[in-house]
Image (tube, rainbow, N blue to C red; front, side):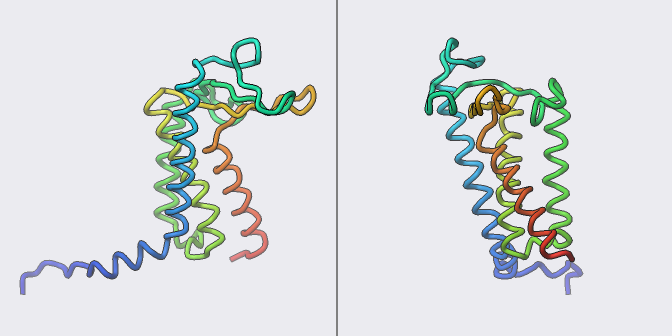
Length: 174
């Protein structure tokens, strides 16, 4: 007897990892789509492109434009200039999701759907903060005179993921 604790068999580790395959697949998909679209925008439009007079691409006239802006804050420009703080918050959030995955009900497929979208979005924006010092936003929607805050694929994943989890939690309280 060596006194060393028994290591978990590889098959058991793989089984635990596969239990979260929907979450992991969605997170990787959202992250990949987010980074591919941001790379394309970064290569196609100079930073600060906003408005048709400054080189934005009009996809649907009067409604949907592609722009290239840098956001050092969070949604709706909250905490502008606090990119480092927001990166730390993102890391803490990912850690908390991992630590409390059982309490969050991540064995459930709907919860995995929600957190896959959420985690993919968090990681996508986190990578931007480390690479660029800001998040690349590029989806610019106009509803008549109202201009919705510019966003990206990661932001959409985060918002949709949170919405799905809230809906699921209200329908299935623990």
